[in-house]
Each structure stands twice: as structure tokens, then as C-alpha cells.
Length: 213
Image (cartoon, rainbow, N blue to C red; front, side, top):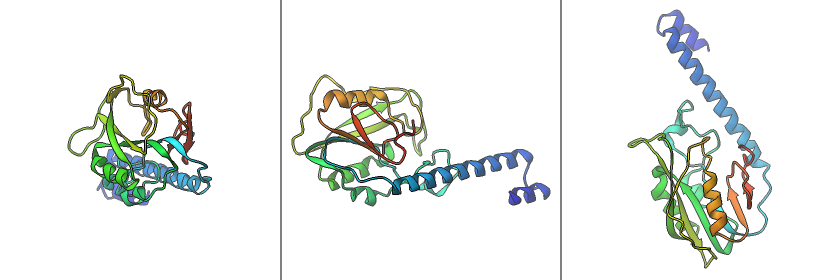
């Protein structure tokens, strides 16, 4: 980039600094391309047909610091949504439905407002304990949470499952297979994953990147 070349000529930037800057710019351009491709794919998604007894949803949370900095290492490579937009979502819920809402420590408070806006009653929280730590503004995150909330009186096959699953971290936003096994074992009925990035047995998927992994 011309700006980097100019600073090199003037001695205002070292070769190492220039290299890092170029890599940051390339990363930002790659993320911007992925976001634009996802936006185009979203516009072509067909409407969801019918109602579902079980819905898993991992919202594209909007982190302010990451959203403003295209080179942030935790920048989401897909379009994000505000809390207001998430609250206004109209999920295809059956009269008796179980919702599994994934959230992070940063959005735990807002998640319960979303659950309330959807007309649901929260029942418990499942916590994913990861094998290594990630990002964090105060403490480095090593957990992710999933709120189980219900509408009406859905069926559930209660067993001896606990509120914890332990599984390794994989690609960004990719949830452990253990989670889907748990939902399949506990929750009978037609299932949907919203904002899905991978197909799992027993689930319909809806999202612009449902074949990502």
C-alpha cells in the first residue's frame, strides 16, 4: 500500500512493522470479502417452512471493539446483529418448543432479555468447558454457555446429563459434536439450527454458511 511505502521511505516504519501492517490489511480485506459473500447468501435464503419442536441458535453477536477494527484477531468473519435485531426475530417455534440459545460471557445479561422477548421461560444453563483459553476483556475465556428455555410444555427425555460438557475448541464459532448428541438424546421432535455453519444428523439447518465445516 502507498501509505506503507511512504513511511518506509521516510524512515517512519521499519521493514518488520511494514510487514505486519501489510498482513493486517490483507486480513481485513479477506474478512470484508467473507462478510460481503455471507450478506449476498443471506439475501437468497428461502423462508423457513413449518414449525419446530426444538431450535438451536448461535446468534452472530456484535462485539463493539471487534466490529470497529477489521484487523482484530477476534473479528467475526460474517454479518453481525444488534440485540434489538435479535429480540425482533420471529423463530418458527411450535406451541410447545425447546430453545437452546448459545451465548458468551460478554452477552449473558442480554441473552436473558432476548429469551424474554421471544416469550420463553429459561430453565437452565449448559456450559461448554474448552481445552484452551480464548479472548477476553477482563479474564481470558475458557467457557461458552447455552441457555435452555421453553415455550409451552415440550417433551424432554430427562436423564443424568449435567450442566457441563467438556470438549476441545475447533474453528471459530464451531460447537462440539457432544452438544448435538445431547440435544438429540434429550429432545424429541423436529429440530432446526438457525445460523448453522455445519449439518448434523437429526437437524434441519438455516443460515448463509450452513456448509462452512
